[in-house]
Length: 325
Image 1 (cartoon, rainbow, N blue to C red):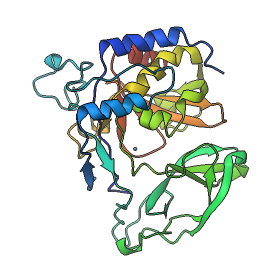
Image 2 (cartoon, rainbow, N blue to C red; image 1 turned 45 degrees about the vertical axis):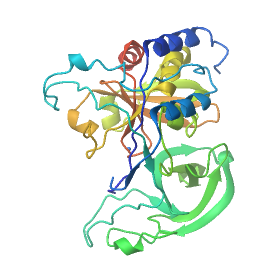
Image 3 (cartoon, rainbow, N blue to C red; image 1 turned 135 degrees about the vertical axis):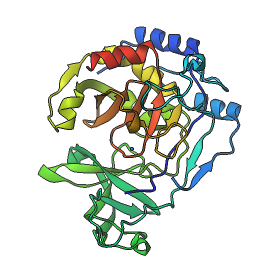
Image 4 (cartoon, helix red, strand yellow; image 1 turned 180 degrees about the horizontal axis):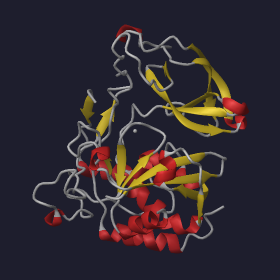
């Protein structure tokens, strides 16, 4: 599907914030157990930072982003002309936020042209897309609607309307998740499958996605899969000590969000052929949140085609990246 909506965000990470993330991880031992209609939010840098600070109520509370240039990025060290051929680039400054409107829908494929179409449905003017993430049916809550699976590769653009879908069945809410972000349908083997909607939201920091929507702060376990195994769809898991990720999660929540799509200032992150690792957070509710780590310091939610990343280069990121290779 094309015409995915994307996000930008403002702010940076101060040295003090990074150090606070380290200190918080040392004192929080009890907390265990991937276009066209971008609407730039008319939000001043300081107002956005204030909103971010008010929204943080986890171990990363008090770690404040700073306005203006991103001090985590040393632009003086950037090559004169960055490209996918000359190494890790310095991204465009994350000064602007982008509001994602709920109404833009994907462009339909050319009639008669086969397409590898992700399963999706449109509900309340919002498109919910298959994540490939499954969960126990105990998380299925109230009935929402029924969709008929009336969209295929021959469908015209005028058919992408309320209730349209490429898969048929009943849709339900998910216990503990905002219905504006996540709904579910029955999946294989008696499980439910999540369908996420990354629209009608403004992302400033990692907390806006990884905490508010995905609840990564509730992780109780973690593992990684090597990129070579992931490419071959081999489920060869390597367990990680959850406590070793505390500083990483704290910093993730206050890191600025950036757009890395083909039409962004940064360009398509996959064009740079960065080394990747695939990290999975196992949550207390029995769900798993997949994230992709890129060697340049970007962290992206692995359950969506939307190419939005938290940008958090530095020692904390590098240590986790190295532990997953």
